[in-house]
Image (cartoon, rainbow, N blue to C red; front, side, top):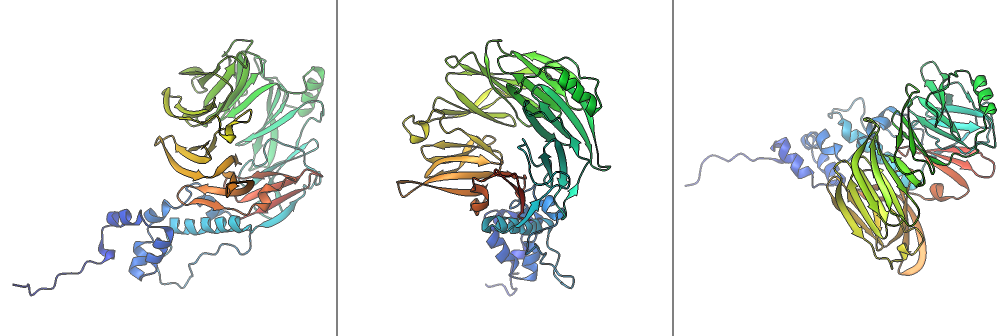
Length: 482
């Protein structure tokens, strides 16, 4: 007998949030937007931060929210003051801003400004680093180092200009980290402290890499006199790493690693790590106050890899010996090593081998003196395996993306990838520049700004600003994509 009561109808909006989240996990952004447009109630359901956050770059959201958009047309919030709808959630709005940036990059829409320092004009000399922060750039002209905030127009000088030693016979390297500028003249190091509130800059301390203590010099003029009284070779022959508050220098063909504290100016340790007759191949930081050291006795001897904790000032148990010439990349607790047509990934904290790929020596990619090696992109190791570009996730210990038909590749600025593709099996190579987001695949970008060979290029981490410096005359332009 049929019931006389009508069973209640359960609509989609009545589902538990946990169930909606499971369903939404399989929906695309277009699907989420379409569901939001069905009704007022559905808009509220699909406006949840939980549903939109996974589609956003977590590090980019707050930066775009607090940074004015200089490009026309600017990003405009879809909300109006007289709207009766519920406010757009934080992460859905973050996705809208991010999508606006990607569209500008993809279409090459930007605002270009000429950069001219007030004191020293257009000409800029080569420098190791251009962006100190996402909106602060370093400008080196002749013997003056200046810092400018390019978020607003006209550009604002952040701190007082820093007067550097002018000596064309000595190689000069400049690195910025936090509120410090490190200037290295061969083996002589200056550390400047920046006060972004008062706009002051001061010489914090100086030291020679291989000496036991810092120098008692606070005055720039006194530093000049000290520098001129010593005979210093023109080029530092070795490797330098700035890892957090640590400055590490290894001189080529020496067995000593010099470790300095950039906060106190004290030398923490001189660490022996290889025979004095060996060749130091490199040292790289991991972003975790750990170092990977690579050295060999000669080109016919094995390459040895060691790990070192700067926090504990002691070696970790990890040690690997491989025959042949090697290249390596380090990310957090993982190291990827290319050696003799093989690519191997280790967890150097646990001394565990996570992955190995044996490559075909006859592949065109491996016929050069140094075969194509790996790169780091986000949390992924990228490597080429028989014309297939693979993305290996060391946390999940698996390949999560494959792109076929790739002849070679290179990662630029830590977040851009240039691909060389083979077109229709004909030996005609085309270049495409793409920004990689593994949840969306590759987003092709307009290449003209990034592939011109007449300029040196620098980009900030969120890809909102590019710097072009002309090789011919040093003239500088800044391209704003946000």
